[in-house]
Image (cartoon, rainbow, N blue to C red):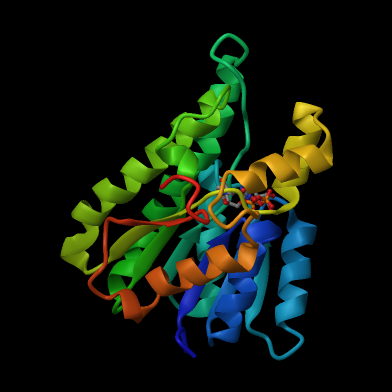
Length: 253
Ligand SMILES: NC(=O)c1ccc[n+]([C@@H]2O[C@H](COP(=O)([O-])OP(=O)(O)OC[C@H]3O[C@@H](n4cnc5c(N)ncnc54)[C@H](O)[C@@H]3O)[C@@H](O)[C@H]2O)c1
C-alpha cells in the first residue's frame, strides 16, 4: 500500500500506460481521478477499479483547454478532498518531417504535450502546495532525448516536457513538491497499433524490428512503465527530483 490515502489525478487514464497507472496506483491504496478526452474510456478504467470500492472518478476533459482543466481540478478536489500527486500521461501523437507538418500540427502537439501538462500543473498547484510530500510525474519518452526519423513534432514536444520537468523541479522545490519524468521506450499500447496504421507498414515486421532495438528483444508492457511512475510518485523517492527514469529495455543505452 505505497500510496495509501494519496489523492491522485492521472491524465490519459482511459488507455494504455495511463490506464495501467490508474489500476496499479489504486491497488496501492490511492484514490484517483481519471482524466481523459475519451470520457467512455476513462469511465471503463474507473469501473474496473470501482469493482472493489468507490476509489476512482472518471472526468471527461481536454487538458489543452484551460477552461476544461479548471473544471477538472474543481471536480477532482470535490471527489478527492485535495491533491497529493499529479501524473501527466495524456499525449498527442503527431509525427512527420519538417516539410510535412503544419502550423496546426505544431499547435496541437505542443497544446497537449507541453501546454496541457503545464495547465494541469498550474491549476493543481494550489492543492499540491497544501499537501505533504506531493509530487508530479510527467510521462515523457526516449523521444525526449534521441532523434528518430520524421518524428519532428512529437520529439520536440517531448523534449520540451523533459525540460519542463527539470525547470519545475527547481521552481517547486521550495514548496517541497518533487517533479520527475518517466521516459518509456517502445511500449505496446493502442498508440502502437495506431502508429502501425499511420506508417502503413507490415505489423509483424514492424513489431519484430522494434523489439530488436532493445537489449531485452521485446516491447515493454504498460504495467512496467506504471511501476516506474509508482516509485517516483511515492514517498520511496523522497530525495529524487528533476530526474528521469528511462524504461526502455536498454534501447537507448
Ligand atoms: N506507447 C509507447 O511506446 C510510448 C513510448 C514513449 C512514451 N509514451 C508516452 O506514454 C504516454 C501514454 O501513451 P500510450 O501509448 O499509453 O497512449 P494511448 O493513446 O494509449 O493513451 C493516451 C491517452 O491520452 C488521451 N489524450 C490525448 N489527448 C488528450 C487531451 N487533450 N486531453 C486529455 N486526454 C488526452 C487519449 O485519449 C488516450 O486515452 C504518452 O505520454 C506517450 O507519449 C508512450
